[in-house]
Length: 414
Image (cartoon, rainbow, N blue to C red; front, side, top):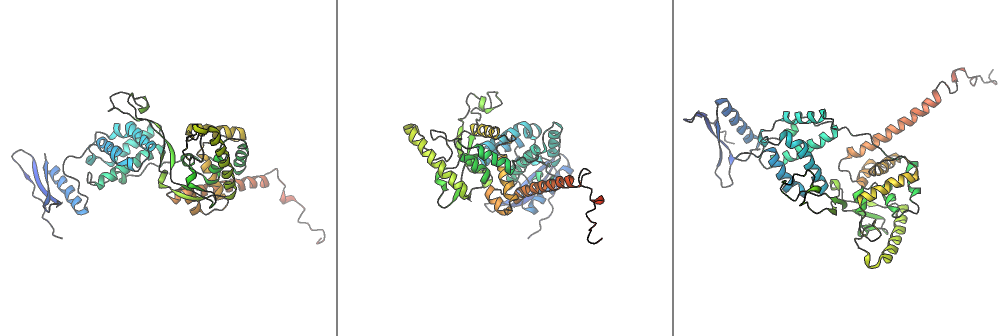
């Protein structure tokens, strides 16, 4: 490799300091040369050194003025993220950009962004009472968008990777005990779509995955089901250029169409799961009941092939599905937990029964085994709590005083 001499830095008649730095080669074979123009010599030297460092690492930024953080984020959210994110995730990204990233960093040029600015934003979030998990989500958005910018030559480094990510401490996991889960299943007797809850507690499907399940992907003879899609609600978005003045897209006069749609499962977790025999029996019974509903509905039936549907064949609304879960918990007389906690319940029970963590990972569709290991830690904590309670019961002052007992005095020995 030919070592090029250090670029000459000279002061021009305009009073500025100039230098020309060759950073690589253009597609046409010509040298890719950048013109440096700065007010002081020190500033010119700093920029020359920056370009030379980029040349050494191969991470040379594109020529021209870099966009602002807000301008690049809008490009990312409009043209890049939709290929890998579902509408609900995009809505969440835009919300965090609007509330945090744009006010703090939006006007900063992308190539001028410093790690300290990210630290300051996360500190501001903490001081305003935001959970660390909220700050962690913002950090992940910044990390991803800056990584794409780096690959496209807009920046020379990803500054989000130069700082410690917010801790993102998760709230304590909630779930039902085995006895509570059995009470819930018992309460489903006579309830329409009762198999919906058997699937939730046996396989730990996410709500969208269960509601998006279709008969074409359920093979009761082979005893397995595929999870290729999930049902999600399309979030209303602004149909204007932001001129309506409304904060929420749902309030925009020209809002986009909302409704339910099938999207890829979270975390690329398309998977095939075995169906336990008792669950297969319940699904067969459910299928028979649904066929009777279809016959009764006649021409009113809207065939979407959904396993769990309304009485006219349309998909179940996630809000109604959640309310059905709340009502079921009340009927079973157990504590109120989120619908997503049915998934935690399934995972915890599987781990407690000795199912290998790798198997649990596949069933739940986790992309990282560390997420699955979190359930093992919960089971360990529960086991420790149980043994501690037994220890307290047996070793308390109110228990039998073994030290003063005469049980060691064997009359035959004496």
